[in-house]
Image 1 (cartoon, rainbow, N blue to C red):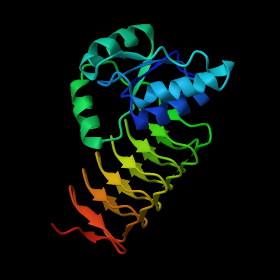
Image 2: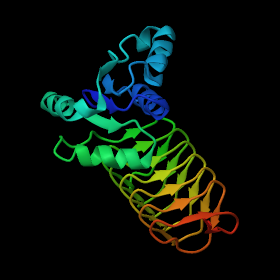
Image 3: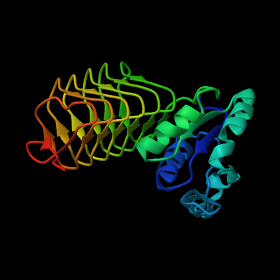
Image 4: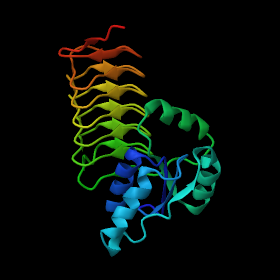
Amino acid sequence: MPSAGLIIVGGGGHATVVAEAAALSERTLIGYLDDSESPALDIWAAAMRSAGSRWAAVGPGRLGRLEEAPGHLAAAGAEGWGWVLGIGDLALRRAILHRLAAAPAAGPPVVHPHASVSPTATLGRGVFVGPRAVVHARARVEAHAIINTGAIVEHDCVVGENAHIAPGAAMGGGVTIGPDALVGIGARIVPTLSIGRGAVVGAGAVVVRDVAPGEVVVGVPARTQSN
């Protein structure tokens, strides 16, 4: 059954993607928190409402600033509502997660109805899975990770907390992605490799070896990016 309600923390471009997936999955959008008073999410909501009566109740808009999130999310928890991060920048996401450490747990995953998630896969709280993404058998995606549009997480992969698998990236079977790591657009990772915490795999890279924590790799085959 869909969640009773969902608050999105953030109101920019990534928030619109998360909000649309939630709306298409018949989640109830309560509103969002953002420092901007006219973010992309307001424009998206107006467009959805103009698309027809089905979207007439898409969110009341901005609830407050990001610094006010702990109070809003505590109240949301009392109502049985969930929350999800709608911010793409991994460092900012991590900072917000530290700030929200005492808040109620994030809501169930937001999975676009056109994504494919194996019944034997595990998705943590606050995970986002975009359209045409695939999460295969026995894969595990930990809390707050992003599996973006068209990304492929093959069998037995592990995607760490707050990691981002960008659009069109593909991971072979048994790959492990550390927390806060970024796998860039269209990157490829061959089976069973490990990408360390906070590492970055550049767009279009082909990774054929393990990547150390914090390392940045680019190219085909992927090599450490020099300063």
